[in-house]
Image 1 (cartoon, rainbow, N blue to C red):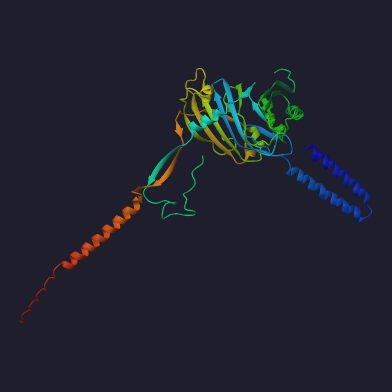
Image 2 (cartoon, rainbow, N blue to C red):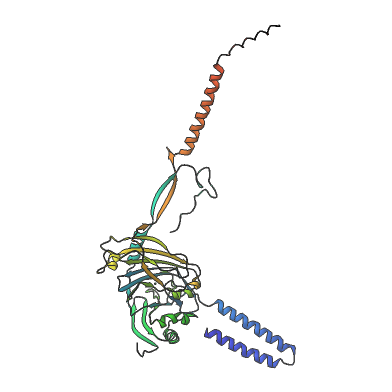
Length: 405
């Protein structure tokens, strides 16, 4: 943005000089008009080169004039009534070599690397069950109702006192992540600190941070610059990043989403909630209706999921998987606050594979129709034969005429 402002100021100065030099003739006017056109073109190109920001858990920004987008964001929320843990993993794409994102949290957080196998285990538990379902009459895709390329339809798819404006309460290096834990009483000061320390901010983030500053939340700022051991130059960030594990105290389970309204691409959220009971979001917060894709009590005794779910006083944790789409991120109105569902009903998605019922490889409906037609033809033929063999009855005798009186 500073580069665009400097360019605009320079072009305005050129326009003023050209106008003064050309006051007595048409050449100056033409040159002034050309300068204005070039200025508008430069500003438009500058806007087109602006990076895109997208993140389902906060605000993600690239470190230069490149693009980065989050195609999928998955997070696990573990709440034991007092303390909340969030393990988040992002899948990113684009050509940026450095990115940063900001995650607001209700209270002081600790941060460490998460276990990537946690999500593999969750995917295995919550995966839909595939079952076969047979039908008698042919459907689209079955002979003779084959349409298009002869294939059936696609399968359904599977967040005190006199304080300084900004205070750094911790700074640590976790693998490829540079993590800063911050407090702030002034969103503008937070903006300047992040910018001075290499955490570039998208336009509008200062205003989006204001509600968190007013509620005295804290922030986890993360920079990621992967370095390859084979080459000293950074490579473009793409694919699935290492998960981060945040822990903090909170009176109610919450998943921060408000900053995602700054994204310029649709957002997809996959949220796993571990608690004593089945959980659900209190509102849609501007996205499509949240859908429950799995609900059930955990049975695993070992592994990263069992380690995360271990707690005191809340019994066997209940796992709830929630999916939600945000086709218009600018409509996101707040954070996801989670509450206990009315009942601990279990649920698992079932994907039915429709199969045509067959007998010895022949469609049952075709056999039925063929046999039915054969029986009908046989019955008609038998009836015709019986009628042809029936003897003809002699004509009835005529009645004698009545006597004449």
